[in-house]
Image (cartoon, rainbow, N blue to C red; front, side, top):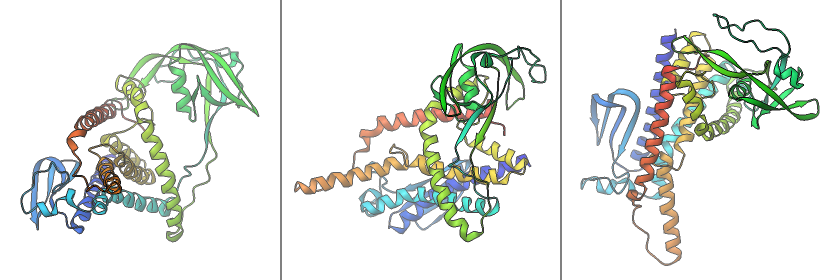
Length: 406
């Protein structure tokens, strides 16, 4: 079942990317542009066929796809037949429509998946507040047993000695906000010396300095199942994750539509927040690659997403499978909106610049300017490709060496 889930999720990713490129292709064809090629996958060609001016085909590596529109930029070499249909010569609204169409396909597909989720299982509450409370104060075990359980210990631990009490709500550790138990653990383990816990006790907020003990702890590799031992900080707290989420309720089809619209809006906000946090996750990914614990909130590659899809299928959690695939489509949409080449958002920004530039030129009685010179943005484009590629390789390495386990 795990293998079936992995294959199905990988297929879902492939379909999502293929439909993204279909959006570009269909919009280009509908507005009179010439599409030379539409391929699913990269690498060696498996097969292709031609219909009209377009070659359709499948390539060996199913990790993406592309749509080759004639004259996407003025740098594109064109035949005399293609010249009148060159994309860069078309009206601004047509070019904008083509670039937004791919993003729109991912939004539509994601929304359909959300509706299926709402009808089949119900929608989770994305606006729920989460927090962490001190469940129990304990001593700090000096080591772990062979099976990973904590060794016995006696006496008060550092947190109890510092004055923390059961029921305290942990707001931050050393100024870093902590909304989940993983956050508290991550911010505490790396501390040597004193960790300042900001807690709320009743209506009172206070800071409690806690002397962190350094102890050996075992970390399980998600790929091999082997344990590595590292020295980390511990303070003797059993944490409890809390939230004020509403109970999940299933919807019939018609009520599911407005509910899905609201959920999609919340998911877009969460996706945007996750995108902004991606640079700060580099250290966590590197930690996972070098033998540390893999946090569940670190970014994942296509491989990692497919493995989580397989785990969800294996455990019968199809709502998680569908929700993850919907989230992936919304991420593709938001990511492609970034105003950076070679992303769709970069091309949209260029078209918007040309339109704004010509408007100001018209106010001054000047003729419209020529096509934007993409060569001026090549250094930035290369930088985006190199940095983005390095991030993808780091994420892929983490998914191969130490995948997330659900």
